[in-house]
Length: 393
Image (cartoon, rainbow, N blue to C red; front, side):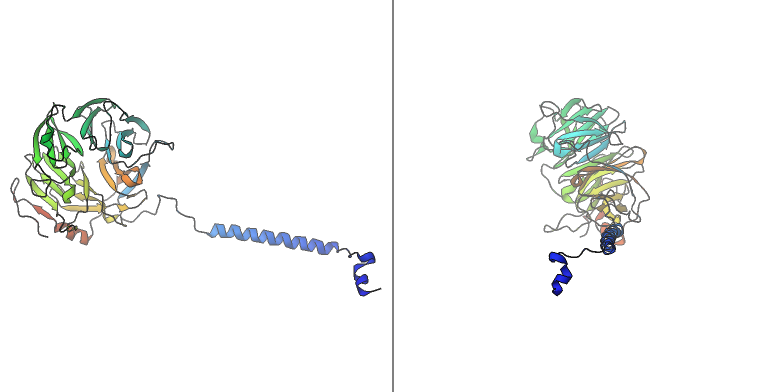
């Protein structure tokens, strides 16, 4: 018998494995599989969990205390905000949002629930590109400046279309060669004041222009404007505060339109040389402070610099805050700002396609660099209604 025959057994048959050996191999295989599984689980547990989008650790000194963000009223097509450019609160505390990319205005409760949609697709009251919204609680009216539609549309607080400016018989030549392009409208002493490309227009109750602050053309002189995107009137002093956006400046004027102070410098050879990047909107707080939104002020920090600049009524720089980004305390091309009831603040965050609602904590002081830059861009008239030398560059 050959050695092979002895190993294989009769007729070449392999000998049977011992049960203990087979059991040992099975146990080893099971343990190996368990070990691999435990290793995978352990690696998963030890892996740092990514922070959900829109959330980050709050920055020390940042005064923004997020309440909520409103992105729309559903996930279906047409239910999300598209490039909102204006916000305001009505007398009931509801939030009106210029959903500009969708050619409509939406009304929400402060909790984010949709109340109504305004702006039919056809007929009276249709909107094209709503840019500014202002409430007139005394008259129960809402003014919507539609710059592409070249009109100011007037609604009740319940959303009913009432009227429009200018009147049908208004001579369009009064608006200059570029025509009427309304950015914001506010009631004031029985009139409606509207910011257009070359200044402020005062309409009577019949929708006709009775006064104009500015020139026939856009310019950067003391009596000229260049796309004044926003303004606010202090009812206590009758002062007008204007963001003269194209000139990169903020202006204070008395009740007759005379300049009191200017913050900002015009560009030099196409380059920004002053403090402001692109001041877009302005709001007046109950504390008398001015809150200015600078749409181009990109900053990674929230405190000491930022998109929102706070001024005193005489033009002094008080605070800066608001970083750029997708977080709940950050902005991406912020447009209008509204100060609502109980300290609630709303900002139309255009490129994040949302409205941010937040409250403010203690305001941080500006950085020393920002304060120095601002001082170099500010000048005041020697007395109310008197001219002053232009600021040094």
